[in-house]
Structure formats: structure tokens, C-alpha cells
Length: 250
Ligand SMILES: Nc1ncnc2c1ncn2[C@@H]1O[C@H](COP(=O)(O)OP(=O)(O)OP(=O)(O)O)[C@@H](O)[C@H]1O
Ligand SMILES: [Mg+2]
Image (cartoon, rainbow, N blue to C red; front, side, top):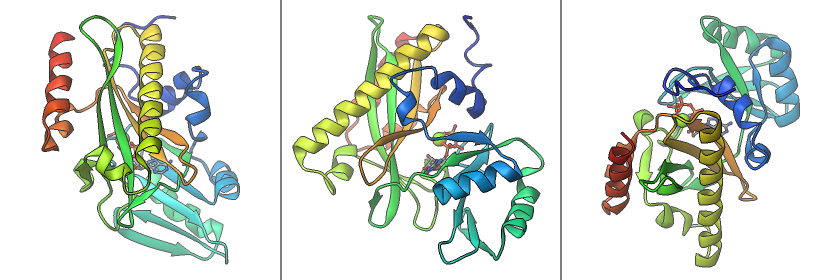
């Protein structure tokens, strides 16, 4: 079925995940995601030890919680900079239940993100329909979490950073080129896939995080991505291109 109202649909991270799982190309890179409830949380913690619990509809990293099962026993979770500890599963769950009972939350396999100066980072991949009608990666930017936080969002104190500078702290230049090609391919493939289903979409922003094996996990696909983050870089060429394509899409 074709959907023509992109701004009113796909706000839900749950719906977005289900749609994206239909893409053969993207599917292997989508972390296991479930709806929040007591038995699913227990199952997910048993499988992954670390999970993210987040609002089904949310922005700016608000309300995003990192939950961990400790090897030596017990559980912790972190919301903003506050860490809470629990001896058993029931007390963990009842505390989370207090936070999550007012709206719908999801549980996602936690990715142990590669770090920069001990701070987690992920990469925003901006993909836009070019004036010639081709999906093109127009911007890549690193987002380094605020020290002591578990989200990388700019509005939660994350620091935007030149992607090559960031990756060069871990990779050789040929490895880096390969990783950048992978990001571009994943972004453009996802753009094409979504455009097929929802022809109204003309730009998307993927949040991609790497684990220690450099697997590019798609943490989220934003369907109304903020172009202004690219204005944070000293080199304005990406920002200008993003804005040019954005204007052409109107
Ligand atoms: N499964 C995960 N593993 C590791 N880190 C995660 C995971 N889920 C979220 N994060 C971190 O938390 C940040 C915020 O999560 P997410 O993008 O899902 O929500 P949001 O930012 O509130 O939504 P939006 O991007 O629409 O504003 C991510 O950019 C990432 O840094
Ligand atoms: Mg996000």
C-alpha cells in the first residue's frame, strides 16, 4: 500500500522499525527491537546484557534509558546522568515501570558504541533526493556523547564532529574510505526503499552506530532530519549542499 502523508506517518519508532525490516539490505543492521513489557525486558536482558529503553515517539534523546544486567548479579540503568542500581529483576522493573507507564516505550538491543576520548559516538547520515531525482548522501557528521551521557544527540549535549577526524582516531585511511562507502550505500539504499513505499519522502537522516567489529547498526531513521547540525562544522560545504537539496525538494 502506498502512503502519501510522510509527515503524519512514521513518527512511531515501532512502525518505522517494522517498515525497515522489509528492506533486505537494511534488515541485518537493524538491532532487535520489541515493545516494552516485563517479560520481554527480562528476555532481552538475558540475550544482550545491555539494552536501550526508549519512548516509541521521542526526540532529542529525551527519556532514553540504558539498562544493564551486571555479570556479578543485579541490574543498573542510566537516564541522563543518573545511574540507579537494583539487586533483583522485580525492583528494576518496578522502577522502570514508574517511568514508562505514561506512554509507549520500546526495548532495543544495546550497541556497545565505538568511543572517542571515552565518549560514545554515532554518525548522522543525511540522504536526500537530488534535484535530478537520485538518492544521494549529502552529509555525514559524527556525534560524540556528552561525557557521562548515554545519548549522542546535540540537544542532549552531544558534540558534532568532522566524521573523518573522528574515524581517523580508529582507522587507517583505506579502512575509513571503506566505512564511509558503507555508510553512503546503507543511507542511499534505505532512502530508495522508503521512497518506494512513501513517495513523499525526500530526505532522511540515519543514526548509525558502530560496535567493536565495525558493524554499522541503524539505531534510528529520522524522517524529518535537522539540516542545521551540519552548520556546526567549520567546513560549510556539506551544510550548503544539504540546504541546496532541501530547497530544491520543496
Ligand atoms: N540500541 C542502542 N544502542 C546504543 N545506543 C543507542 C541505542 N538506541 C539509542 N542510542 C543512543 O541514544 C540516542 C538517541 O536515541 P534515538 O535516536 O533512538 O532517539 P531520539 O534521538 O530521541 O529520537 P530522534 O533522533 O528522532 O530525535 C542515539 O542517537 C544513540 O546515541
Ligand atoms: Mg535519534
